[in-house]
Every structure is written in C-alpha cells, then in structure tokens.
Amino acid sequence: MQAKFHNFIKKEFEFRCLRNPHYSMRAFSRDLGLTAPKMSQLLKGRGGISPVRAHAVAQKLRLSEVEIKIFVALVAADHSRSPLARQLAREQLNAIAHSSDYATHATFHIISDWYYFAILELTETLGFKSNAGFIATRLGLPVTTAEQAVERLLEMGLLKEMDGRWVQSQQHLSTSSEIPSRHIRNYHHQILAKADLAIEQIPVAERDLSAMTIGISESQLKEAQAEIKKFRRELSQRLEKNANPKDRVYCLSMQFFPLDLKETL
Image (cartoon, rainbow, N blue to C red):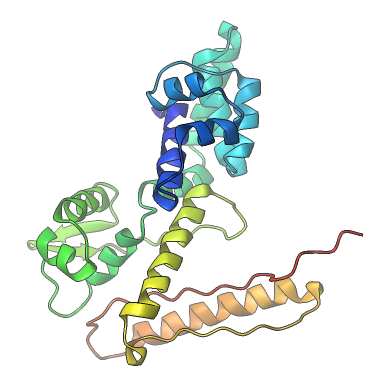
C-alpha cells in the first residue's frame, strides 16, 4: 500500500473548496483541530502528526471505520517514534490491503466521480464511438478528463478493448449503504448536484423528479430501505431486458431521509 496519509487530507480539502469556493486553509485547520502552519505543511505532503492526533483528525474527516484504520496506520508507519510500532503499522496496512472490503473501497475511491459509471454505460448505447472526444461531448466533460477516466477504467479492468472498441467488462462494483465512506458521500453530492441542474436544464418530458413527505414509525425504516433496494434492482433488471437499442444514459437517484430532528429522551 503506497498511499500517504497526506492524500486523505489534500483530497478532503479539495472537495470542500469545490463545494465552497470561499473555504480557506485556515478554516480547514480550525475544523480539523490543527494549526495553520501544520496544515500548510500537510497539504504540501510534508511533516507528520502523532497516531493519537491522527485518530482525532480521522474522526473529524468523517472517515469510515476502514478508512480510519488505514489513515492511523499510515501515520504510525511513518511517524511513530518506536521502530516496533512502525513495523506493526506496516503489517496492519498489508493485512488491510489484502482484504476484500478494502479492495472494494479502494476501487470506489479511484472512480468515485459520477462520470466513470456514465462512461461505462455509454459504451453500450447506440452509436457509441471509442474516442475521448465523443465521450467528452456526450457527457459535457473536458477531453482531458475523458481521456484520464478511460485510461483509469482500462487499468482497473472495468473497461476493456475488443476489436478496437471499448466495451464494459462484466465486473460489477457496489458498496454497502451502511459504510459512511467520504468517497461514497462525495459521489452522492455530485449526483445531487447533477439532479439540481436537471431541474433547470432538462425538459420535463425527459426527466422524472418527484418527492413526498410522510410520517412513519422509526421501526419501519429497515423495511422501507429494503423496499427501495428491491425497487431499484427490479427496475434495473426490467430496463436491461428491453430489446430496444440503448441510446441514452440515465441516473436513478433516490433519497429517503428524516426532515425532523430526532427528539432526545
């Protein structure tokens, strides 16, 4: 595992700046409980922090359980004062790297931007052309972004080249909805932003956006989540079986969340 803990911090800062152009390094330092000079060093990939401080920072970054283990171990592997602690951290990183849970999340971390999945589905549409210019035009991306995305998908085996044409492999990538990975959260932020644009830019006849507000018993939550998953799966299977050629790429995004604040007893 060649990653550095600095990358977690840099990626999170970049994401917060994208969501809020006025977000500053000083604000980021405050939010993570670090001094501005220390944050400046970390964003440049320099310096370190203690494993104890790393755990506190990881929690403020809202990392998943797996990501917290990785983050703290990366810090300990390079910055623990004890040689034994550094060795144990490296062994822990090696064990994590070989776990199936890490493999899934590492993959999603690399292709968590919305357009990776859109490219995969676009390859199956009528008239698809295996060049970055075509992809960039259809998805509204810079050509360089499309080129880098295709290269990454090919490297990961999610896309392959057959007879000069890019085709989607049979691999399927899914993550547990119960794992609060920041990369999964960022993906959903992007999808919601695309949905917001669709309200203004896509004709009503080409979209379906709806919402309803209902009161429920909290004991029904698991049942509701199961029904939503069942609906997504069954709709996807029906649409996939349709004999008509595919000519568009759509996104189904569903939200089911509380509008009220839970009462503290």
